[in-house]
Length: 90
Figure 1 (cartoon, rainbow, N blue to C red):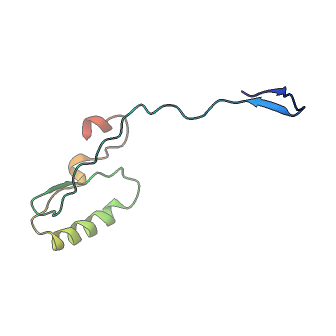
Figure 2: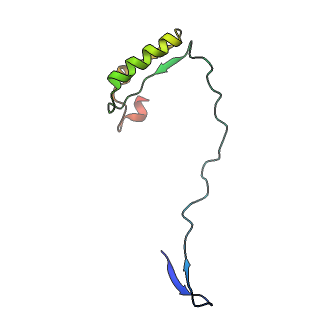
Figure 3: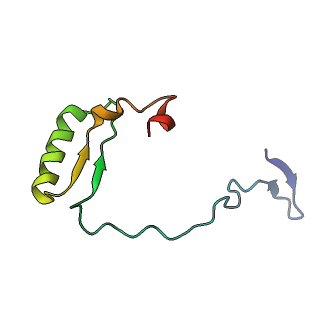
């Protein structure tokens, strides 16, 4: 909340609060990138909102052609992860 007071020069003066707080989490370096998807297992998560039934097969086929050693756990194995069970499913 702002309170207005007259300053010495006759201009209003406002007291304000800074909207940002101190950082609660300290930054740290990101994990190194995976250079090659061969031998990697890729899990598909879908919240059943945007065309996953169309997009996932296209993406899976493209990645398989580029990285034949990649394995997939399809979104049907996880089901809809969105909602109160999200942490348990993931």
